[in-house]
Image (cartoon, rainbow, N blue to C red; front, side, top):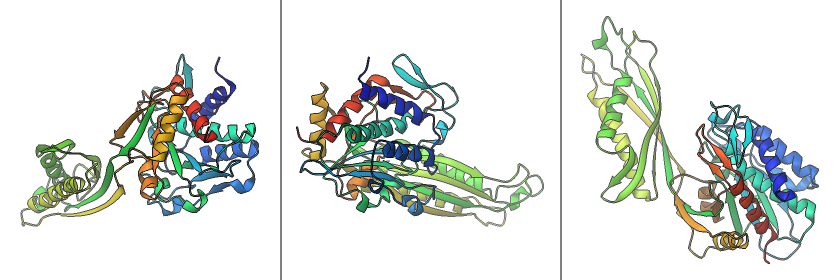
Length: 391
């Protein structure tokens, strides 16, 4: 039988997995976390929300939640982090335990293990500190919003409520022994294609199809190797056109289409080269697709940096402390760099170098998503070790 601390963490996880909370709608899980903290004795003044959602391009109903605790020993402040939102595919998930895994009972939904596993690990550690009264370093526990929608919670977090942490540990990933020390940078784009409407059966030659313009551009990007995994003379990145909406009816030449695309690379200049290739393909396609009068369509492109790439120094204090915690529970830490964005991207960019640890989630963003319970328990033990501070 698992120790009481780990059993409580599993109970918290099962409750969190059953709550809705896609990006921008995290209020149910945030309310549950705040309620548990208050019930465990956290003074009202130690629990704070910011207004990160008001600065996000997506809006939202709640900001980040932080619980800041004074230390019982003189030491640098430590911060444990997890994002509270899930992707839309997790709406309606019903978690069930099956042997050594937790899965969704509904085959049509993802589980939400990304990242309710991290939320439960961080909350269990906070509750343990409040109830045990054991000596500990100054601590901040942070649950962020809108990570899945572009790391907006971490990007717009109110730093003043965090207490200037000297070390930071982000729980979000797979194996509990994996330490993500760096991540790629991401750039996103909204592409609006304006065509000319015409009757598709009567006078299609008078129209300019926005869908045709988009198709010509995407086909060129595919042909020239600017979509999917990109390798241009050893410079690496990825490109994707992820959504497309357009047209009004089958009997109307499509006057409008809107697409969303992204480019990623650890190499900032190469990432922008991917962006320029996407821009060029759409602008050229708009000029080439014309009606019988020689009139072409138009393209408007709005792009922004979602998050910049980073890699922690090999001797980073958070990294070394996380490795020590993993070894303390009998594990062997493995350093890794990932091709996705993490809250650690923005926290590191904002002056809080952050290492990310796994907590047992598997196959995130898919209906096959699950929690490896053994790895989740390891993550709970690592988190408890981290909040205790210097041995």
